[in-house]
Length: 121
Image 1 (cartoon, rainbow, N blue to C red):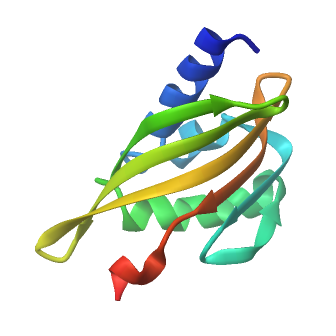
Image 2: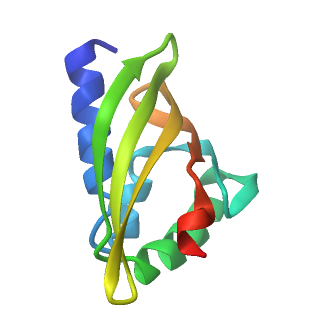
C-alpha cells in the first residue's frame, strides 16, 4: 500500500471510532482480524468478538475523538502514534498512544493498542 493510501485509510479509520457507529468501524477490519487493547489484553479475534466489544465501547464513548500524530509505515501496515480526547466526567482526558496496525487486502488484520491507563484513575 502506498503512503497516500495508507494515510487515507488510517485517517478514515480513526474517524470511525467517533460517533457510536460500530458497523462503520467494523467495516475496516478483516473477517478474522485480531484486536488487543489494555482492557482486552488477551485479545479478540474475528468480527463476532470485535462487534460485541466495539458496540459496548463506542456506546460508552460516543464523543471521543482520535487523530493521527505520526504514521510510520511498516512492511505489513504501520505503527501509528495517535492522540485521543476523551470526555471523562466534567473534564476531557488527552491520551497519546501507539497502535500496531497490519493490513491485508485493504482491511485491518491486526490491531494492537498501547497507552498508559493511569489517566483513568
